[in-house]
Image (cartoon, rainbow over all chains, first blue to last red):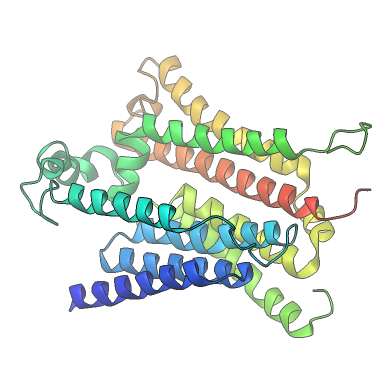
Length: 179
Length: 141
């Protein structure tokens, strides 16, 4: 049942991507991006990764849509037609895709309990997480405590992104035009 | 969009719940799904929703630019400060065990503070990026 739901959602996502590729109206493209993100979030819910699903729904479907629409209000909403041939980019994209699919054959089977990721520290987190950190949500415990350094790094990355946008877009006071 | 009555009424009804849900996700992240990152994004989304319906100037009045900039820097400082507090109290960097007399409650305290830092930075950065993007299309004052 669950795999059927996931497969249906994945087919819908593929359909969204094909439609995205064919559309020339950028407003419709932004809406389809949002639909794609919501489908992805639903797949993640079906895979019991609720924390990631929340992030995907709020960032991918929420904030990114608003930012894309804000960008769209600055430029036109019709995509210009490419003058060069599109066969070489298509072939390149297909080749990269096939290479990635080939790469997945080297991965352990889906939800294989003997996969390396489940045999290293995951067992310790699951068994001792609540006793050591006092936090029932194991995702929060791993994120904020066991992997606190990584999360500090992520926070600094987000801060740097914000600082970069401020540095690029801030209007200088008193300058000529301020662009 | 100030003239759309239905949008204004629906926004007025929805925004308090969006903001409340953000706080729930922030402070209930230890027990259920969510945490600082998601809470920060939802909080920012609530304010962005307000800005979309009532205009950028009104949104800037409830979340001023200086406050947003302060928020996005303060979050990183809170996170790093928790790390430094670990060193000052005799542990390692980001060592939560020494933050309280009992190691487990020290962990809980550290995790809550760290998540608060993440939430502040994420909320600040999302709002700041939105403000900067939205202000680009406007005539300069």
